[in-house]
Length: 183
Image (tube, rainbow, N blue to C red; front, side, top):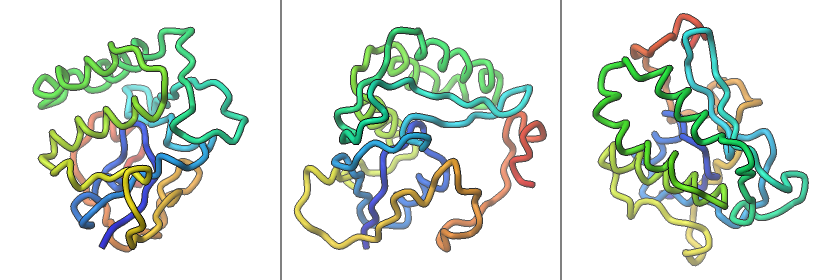
């Protein structure tokens, strides 16, 4: 069985679990960009509470395909995001083992949001030893059957068990007491 998802910026465990549960994960690269979604934002745990990392984009009000959404690179958002990630996780176990894989992405100039998201996802898949061939883009495939799970993992939806395949399992996380990860 296959599943259809949208692109996410540094996807959550719930999102990544789909790569273990389904034969193929189809990322919709033809959809219209949706504001205030995980396509250009993620939340990390900081010492003083949650930190929202939001990639600034141009023309977010227009109904443009996600592949055409341009990143607004007028400020140094990549440097700021990487510094926030290092500050939040730099002293955690294993950060030193993976930082060198992510840092080049935050130092490379990107024009398109989808390209940035996809490059980060591929790095995460490699780290998790998930076969990249499980990942398919809608623009690169013919019609295949899939479960449409787009927009079910969304910042405006509090996790309420809508995803029967996903169960939250407690694990130690830096600063979890500051944001109430498991409450």
